[in-house]
Amino acid sequence: MKRILAIDDEKIALRNLGRILEKEGYYIALADSGEKALELLKKEDFDLVITDLRMPKVDGMKIVEFVKEQSSYTEVIVITAYGTVDSAVEAMKKGAYYYISKPYKIDLVRKVVKEALDKVELRKENLRLKNELKRLKSDDVVPIITRNSEMLRILRTAKEIAPTDCNVLITGESGTGKELLALYIHNNSGRADKPFLGVNCGAFTDELLANELFGHEKGAYTGAYNSKPGLIELANHGTLFLDEISDMSNNMQVMLLRAIQEQELRRVGGTSNIKINVRFIAASNRDIEEAVKNNEFRLDLYYRLNVIQFHLPPLSQRKEDIPLLVRHFVDKYSKKMNKKVEIIGDDFLGILRNYEFPGNVRELENIVERAIALFKGGVLDQQYLPDYVTKFSLISFRDKGQAYPTLEEQELEYIKYIMKLVDGNKTKAAQILGIDRVTLWRKLKKYGILS
Image (cartoon, rainbow, N blue to C red; front, side, top):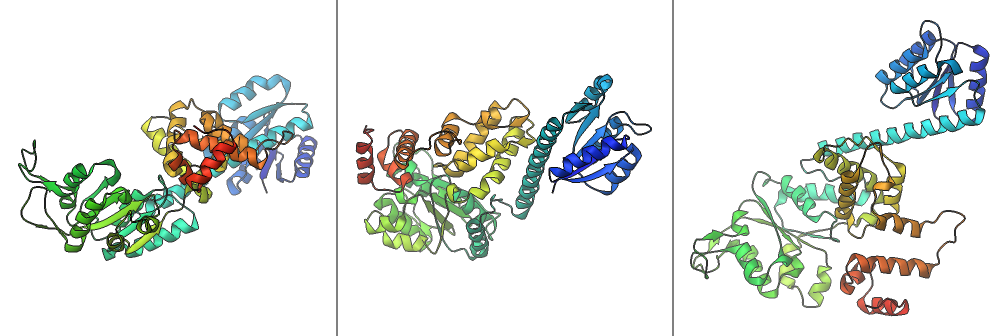
């Protein structure tokens, strides 16, 4: 129940105001002088204070100043007679939310009180998010922002196995935080003070990847004027993170398997083996078991890497994390861009909660970074969200009074949206939609959007 303190030295006016607000379901405390109001404010917390401006000894201006010094979220509404409007404006400069002139209309009082309490609730929610974020960040060296039960279970298990040095396989959609989990495991292990290095296995040709991982000796190929250690060697006594491991060719898989099994490597163009002590953490956005069945990934390498496996859920399955992650990224980018964002609007968070995030946490971070870059002050609201996010939300949840879309219309809009997001790549689109390419082709043909 919202708590309101009403202050007026005219007792009849005070009782009438109290009755109006009680009927709205609020808890009301009454004070017929500024002195009594200060005593109550020192002992109790209130969401809203409604005070007359002209009172003997302790006037409404002093009440405003006291409330703003004592509380970070309590709002103040000033009630004033016609002749003291200038003073009311001055009170608003000192932090009052609104002023109402006497004689006031009851509907206006109800409206302004509700708006003020909504703002209080928004500020409280932002404060709760900040405090929870602060607690989460203080818990671990590598904070992973979550309140999702499955993610919390994964983090507990990851912390338990971190000191064991066993190899780990992490699966999940792109942008779910696989590298962050790998770093979390590394920093909770005995290797925390040693190197943590990473490489995207799908970003190189075989020759370049071999050079990147294993290094080369002087003269190994044209332009190799000096010897160079590879990432495996540089990660000695530490951890090597192999992202998108399923994109690695069969030949490279054989070379990696030998290094993992023997804990030694040979540089490109080298003749002697180099002993290593490296923990391998691999990640993939593909179903590795399916890749093994299709002879696209070696079974023996899979067993070497899959000592412990974690599957990270997509952001669409951990919607409760969106407000926390938004607050985290708002703090990060407002500091980076030297902008002050105190309040995140309900509409901003509401639209993001209804959005499906095919790009997961990475996409959310990009959306927030863009919003902060455009931010002009005040409340961070939906005007700072990109059109493709707000339009998708409007398609999914239309206002009452409008025609609701059919299931086919919803499917059509979503397929068109995903196809645009992946630049027409049908393989990627089918993966995001959770269907095979043939089914996607049939739907594209059905809706006349084949390209």
